[in-house]
Structure formats: structure tokens, C-alpha cells
Length: 163
Image 1: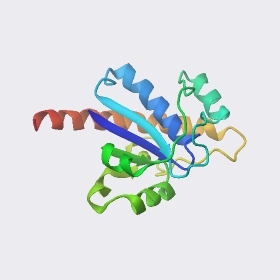
Image 2: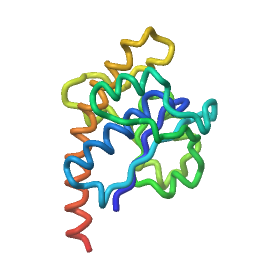
Image 3: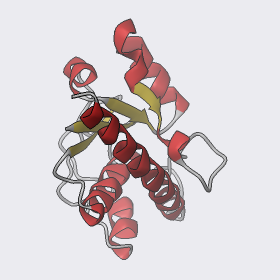
């Protein structure tokens, strides 16, 4: 089992979009039985809330259902539990580094490191925009998710060889 956590600020736009898209792609690739995925925020502004309605509308237009996801804040136990903790931007990554024990810092990274089509390392926060930003977030998340799925498959092969 490989466990992935996507993290943004409030867990109502970018990270739940990444969770929903990645979950959908895992199901398509038939790897959902050995990969666990979740999302969280660095701040507890929206704990218990569903993703932003604009994020949900943009996602549903592309066939992704985010309606069951609920916002939560990163907790210290996440740093032990998840194998990979991927931040949507550098600010979230820095906040994660502050609470992450030194021996687990290798689990942290930027989600866009897995992108092939975008030369950016951050997924921009669409929350305060007019709405078009949610489609850009989806474009970026879809691309990075494809790269991450390839990496997860490679990692699974290595884990199997080492058993």
C-alpha cells in the first residue's frame, strides 16, 4: 500500500481537486486497491466543508466527482501515516516542513514536480479569482497526476522487489 496526501491552504480547491482527479485516474488504471489517497489543508478555515462549488462544477464538467470530499486540517499523525505528502505550493510545503520531523522530510514535495506539460512548480490558488482559474487547476492537476501515477507504479515495483 502506498499512501498519498495532497495539501493546500484550506482544502477546498486545489488539494481536493487533486484527490478527486488522482482517485479517478487510479480507478481507470486499476491501481486503486494498493494506493490510498487523501487531501488536507495547512489551515483549518473550512474543516468539514465540501469543496468550493466552483471547483466542483469545473471538476464535474470533466467527469470528476468531488462531492464526497470534506475539508480537514493536516495533523501530526499524517506525517507518519502518508508515504508521500505533496503540497500544491511552496507556502504549504514550508508550513509542512516546520511541523515535519527531520527524519520524515523526504516524504514532502511539490505536486507539480510530476508535471510534464507545465514548467511551474506551484498550482495557483483559484479561490479569489473569477472562476477560470479552476479549469487551469484541473489542467495542471491532470498533467501532474499522470506523472505521479507513473512514479507510484515504479515505486510499487521497487517495494515488491525488496520484499
